[in-house]
Amino acid sequence: MTDVRTASDVINDLFTNVQKGKEVVIDTVRKVIDGKENLEFHFGNREIQPEMPKQPDRKESPRRQHCFHDAASLEIYLKKYKTAETVVYADTIEERVYVVIDEKAITGFEIITMKPQMHPLFTPWENIIKKGYIEVQKFADLLKENRRSIVEPLVKELLYTLGQIKVSKNLTLQKGFGKHSVNGIVCEIDITGKGNTENQQVEIPDTIVIEVPIYLATEPVTLELDITIDVDDDNDIVAKVTSPDLATMKVKAFESMLEKVKAIDGVTVTLGRPDHIDWARVK
Image 1 (spheres, rainbow, N blue to C red):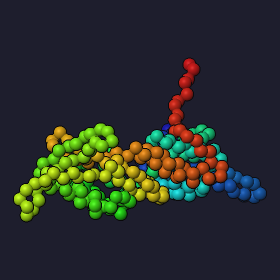
Image 2: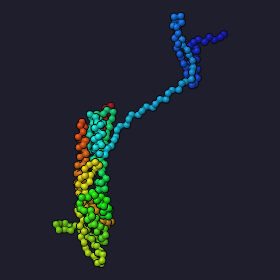
Image 3: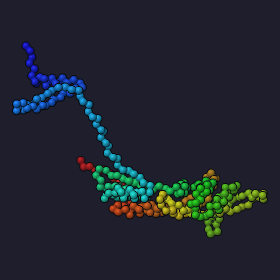
């Protein structure tokens, strides 16, 4: 007896015995014969057609975290990219400016920073002030390299005085008090051609006046440096350099840069720095 295969058997075989690399194809054909419409189904197998490669999903653009070194650059940027909710925070202690582009942002805050860059003409002076002292010979070399920044006294005279200290054989440190006291270094110098020695008082200027810009793209300022000649624990002659007015001058220079930002329309400027913490959650 011959098995009679029904249409269901054929369809079942097509879907259950699919070979690897093949796929089932079902086509429908509408035909009109003698005014009657017939719908035919054609089943078959064919090689699987390769799919077009899918492009990987593009990452979201990272949040902005730019850093500017002068107020003019920050001003240009804010005029172009500020929003109605932009807030500027000026931290005078850290000498930084922080800009929150959108203070009401829901998906995260973008914070731009201005970190004023120290002017190269002021950098060597600041390094000495931070250290507090420098060997006299190195101090003389510094004066030579930065002579154009010195307003008074005359660099030539100052270098001559420091040179006397350098060549002296015996030094006595005088520290007196009162109107007629003696302060400074007494040098015992060998006078060539006379064969004897004499005591000579070397007068060291108490103050050096320099004129340099503190930050890039800012105006030069006049700054007084207090100079004291001393002897360290190793009996080396050193120059102690301090500047009581430096902190005030740096604040003024910082504020002058901030004025450019304050002049931008629609930008809120405050003193402080931004800080964000997570919300407390109620279970």
